[in-house]
Length: 360
Image 1 (cartoon, helix red, strand yellow):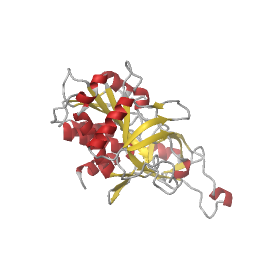
Image 2 (tube, helix red, strand yellow):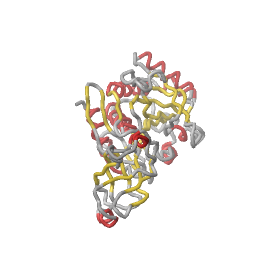
Image 3 (cartoon, rainbow, N blue to C red):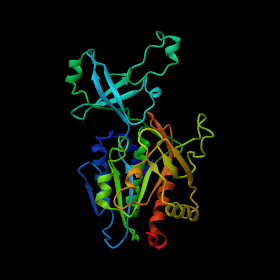
Image 4 (cartoon, rainbow, N blue to C red):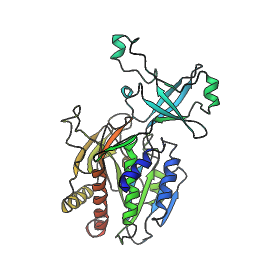
């Protein structure tokens, strides 16, 4: 297992739903300190790593969010079962029978499982019906409300999917690759470029609450005041039988570049990246013979959606890596795509001043 894959493994074993990212933030801070000029955690929980103090150089911020999807307990039944609400976009069809971790008020992990009606007792219609989130419950083995409370669990406690990790060939199977894969890239970048004499001042931002509101990164953006933002996040792979034909994005095809992202539901937001950044990054990829997958992302957003609107406007671009089964209990990525993305970003940083900042 190489260093990058090991970092992905360690990060995915941590628990960090939106608002509860401290475990992940502490890990990133600890591993960043030996390589960064300065590492701070702001009042909201964002980790800000400054590589070099080059006050006369343009600032480039590279971000990845730390938080993961999950649930919050909304009600404890008298017989000890837990009712939950969703944190982030989670398909209800993925939940029955899945193992979870309930995080109590002391930060301890309590094992549980989403209940499912016994197949023998379910009607033919029920076997084909998706259970609504309002009807789903978590079973932790408690027999009463009091027992649940005695275990340190109360309304408002977070719930996440059970930690999973295994590797087969170059593929990584794990929970919360969205976006611990991006966080692993930040740390690997830090290790590889901390001694480089770059033509820009680089900040690495590990952000909070992306899955909740996409605005947790804003205090860090206002503190750093970057001239350019590179946002690292996932892109849905469409190389599985059920998505074949939707797009050409596939595992092992290289890093991705979003040409357009738009949610289309609820919050009307997204990113149409600065065209000069698209041209610049695309040319670098061609020069380095890195396959760069072009992606149009309808139905999803990244931190760049609102960060681009800060200050006087920040030219931004979404770069990422493909994953299968996004926002499900187990996601899949290809470590070769992560490595190629790191290679691309390093090449981009080396050429920023000469080819780009004259435009700003």
